[in-house]
Length: 66
Image (tube, rainbow, N blue to C red; front, side):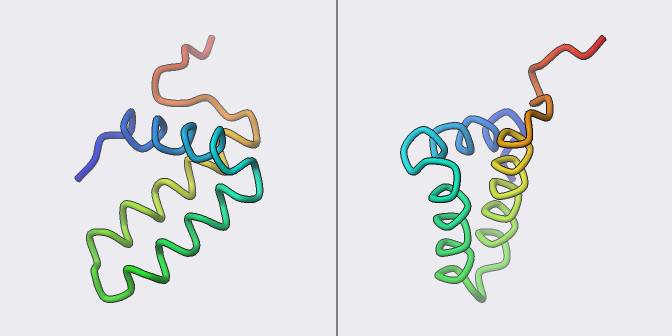
């Protein structure tokens, strides 16, 4: 299983590469392509959640919240 830090790093890279909507679309494509591979689907769903959090401005795993 991947760490939260790795998941958020991947999400940030996807946003940088594909843009806001494109990052979410890419996640959906990977989830569909990995249907039947439970571990892969779980990771990509986590990445999709992280993309959503980053786009919403929610803090990531390394952010300090006061």
